[in-house]
Structures are given as C-alpha cells and as structure tokens.
Image 1: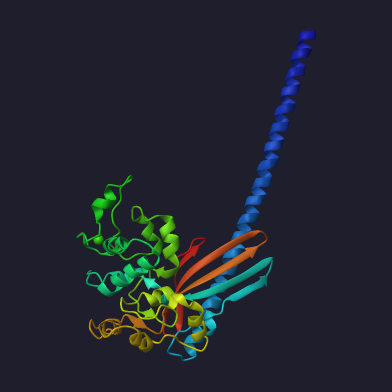
Image 2: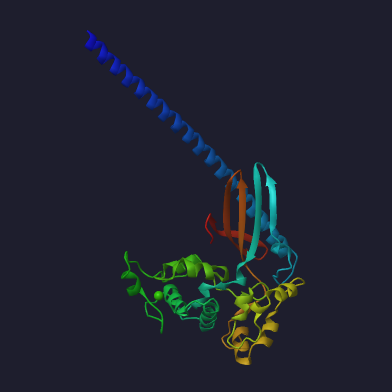
Length: 317
Ligand SMILES: [Ca+2]
C-alpha cells in the first residue's frame, strides 16, 4: 500500500514536470511566433516605404529630364541626398548616384566580343592607382567575353575555374553585378572593397560622364593625363558647384593628342567620354525602431521616363 502511494507520487511529480515543460515550451514558441510576425510586419512596412522612396527618386529624375538640361552634373537637384524624413514609426532617407560616373566593367568587351582596348587600359590604371594587380583586367575580360580563348598575358578561361573546388565555369557573358569579380579565384573581399566605389556593371555599353566621375576615375583616363584630381579633390568639388566640370573638351586639353583622339572617339568611332547619363543607383535606407533596411535600385532613364531595372534588398548592386 505504502509502495503504491510512492509510485503514485512519482507519477504525479512526473506529470507536473511534463506539464510545466510543455507550458514553458508553448509560452516560448508563442513569444517567438509573435516576434516573428512583428518582424515580418516591420519588414513589409519597410519594403513598402522603400518602394515609395524609389518612386520619389524616379520623380526627381523625371523633373531633371523635364528641365531640358543636356548635361548631368553634380550641381543638379538629383545629386542632393534626401535627409532622414520622419514616417510612421521611423525614418526614410535616400540618395541617387550617377553610375555613368563609374567605370563600367561591361565596357571591357566590345559588342563583337573583342577586348575594348581603351577600357582595358583604363581599368588597368584604376587597379594600379588602388595598388591592385593589373592582371585582374585580363581575367575580367575573359570572364565576360563569350569566347574561350585566353586573353594574353593574364587571362583565364574555364580551365582556371573547373580546377577550383568546387569547380565552376566562366560566365562568358556580361556581368549582372560588379560583385561577380569575387568569382575570380584569389580576388577576395578586401580587393573588392577597395575597388567597389569606382566600378559598376551596367546592362549596356556606356560613356563615362566626366561631370560626375570621381577624381580617381578621371585621373586614370589616359596614360598621358597631366592633371591628378586625386591630389586636390576639394578643388574638383568646388569647380562642380556651378555645373559640369571637367567638360569633355577640358579633358582633351589635359591629355596628349593621340589619347584625346581615342577618348573623343575620332579614331574608333565610339566615344569613350560623355556629359550625360541614363543610369542611376538609388539607395534608400528605412529605419523602423531598432531595425534598418536598405534598398538598392538600378534605375534606367529613357528619354523622360525612368524605370527600375534591378533591385537588391540589403546588399549593394
Ligand atoms: Ca570567356
């Protein structure tokens, strides 16, 4: 009898313990579910706000197109960032960047699949200016070009990639994102971080907008470039307060005649320089409570209309 009571007591204790465990579990699951739902609501809200700001960016570019200005320069309204604006439960801020002020990696290969010598030489000088190895220029050409012939001296085709573990093939097509450079064995995040602010991967060939290009991109335009804008970036910024600087014509006075003819396109027929743009990057940052979300959008302008071509939520284009 005594023994039976003992057993009953143990069973009762086990039942209570089990019930307590289940209750705790249900409680924490419930809390997690609620937290998860709250996060999803915040995320959806942030996404909708970011899309709203993206429309704002398109409106600004539309107004810019309506203004009738032929040049795209840094003194224009689009170039002024949108400061943090209060919205329901947080803030939204944004900025537009003219991507034709960057070096377009997809310019490295011509439409006929040959290397664009002018762009390749420019890219080599950009790499040099950043203390990076020039071999990455040929490697990028081979990664993009449709053929499987190795570009000399530094190129590589499928063999270099199939021998990796795990193996893969060269893209042999235009880059969708500049971050594809990370696919080149040994390139690495450190090099990419250094190069990233100066490069882009646009879906079409583009001219370089000298009105918005960075000091480094301008100074490396030609081997014979006599002006080093990197020495005095403030002077360049000052010169840009009132309009486009340097104009294409200004650049031609800063290089020797042969380089000038190449940049102006009078030798190849294709202009390397321009003073306008059809490609922008909109960066929108939405903060709600302690959460922050960033939307990057590639915008293409066609006449007076602008449309989003690519969106990335969280990581840069
Ligand atoms: Ca190739």
